[in-house]
Length: 116
Image (cartoon, rainbow, N blue to C red; front, side):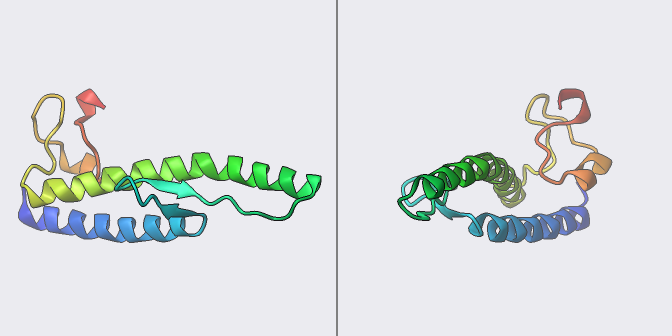
């Protein structure tokens, strides 16, 4: 694979990683016990019924967002690791090179279009 393309996509992945980390940081914090995991913040708004109801609702809204962003961040970290060990752009299912078009759309793609 073209080294300039890998460098370009690596730069895009780093920018996306930074943006995702910042977004996650607005409502979650890194899990101290599990590397790469995040935990949605649970805010204590008070002891009343209304406050407790709002706390649960906000937390329930944050959990799926946290999971989605965390998964995307893990995919980006995996792609950056593949760049380091020279296995970037290789389909995890068949071992063929993932085409440039697909990688430009999704630089963290794990599989070619035949196995996505």
